Amino acid sequence: MTVATDSPPPATPFLDRAGIDALVAAGVVVPAPDAVWVSARARIAAGAVLHPTVVVSCDEASSVVVARDAVLHPGTRISATEGGSVRVGARTILGPGGCTLVADGDELYVGADGRCRMALLLAPGTYGDGCQVLGPIEARACTLEGGEPGDAHDVASRGALLKGAGRAAGITLARGQVINGAGDFRRARVEEQVAYHPARGERLGR
Image (cartoon, rainbow, N blue to C red; front, side, top):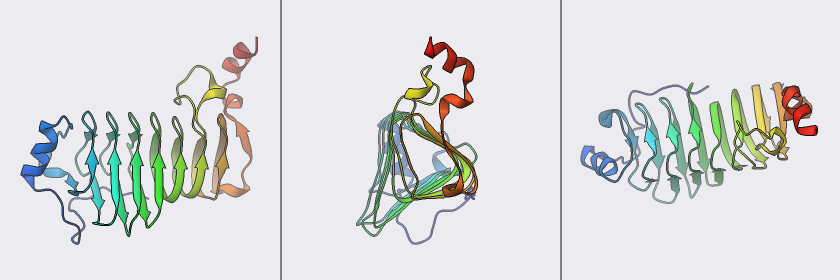
């Protein structure tokens, strides 16, 4: 679903090596400065990690913000065009296995402490703090309520979760809920994440 790239899209102006070096001087972690492509309009916070083959593309009418300590693994692509915006929260992890976020004229928000792996997220979409999309999954117009990170001891307090393989369109999940889908996620049951962690659930219920 997402493929690592060896070259940037040809129509987007990207920072030259001096611009990438300036990001590094400002605290962005770039292990291979000659193997990432970042638009000048994108805002990457100190502590964020851009691994090789990451592409962050943003046209003149759009915006991309990657918050502190977010990690973009190899093959991650972020694209905002036609007035669209992409926001990636602090400490959120995109990848490994490829992850693509696309906002064409709309808004895509991924909160803090989230995790997206083998995911294609298409705007509009809102994924609150601690939410996870673990694919391969194509998701569009989804709203996942935020909560605690995906490794929080209180499973019911975790951000909502999509996992499995297929397409999720127009899905809304509350905190602590999950869809484990195959194919069309609209046909899958909404479950409580605690159902996948019965031992923890029993302890929490005491």
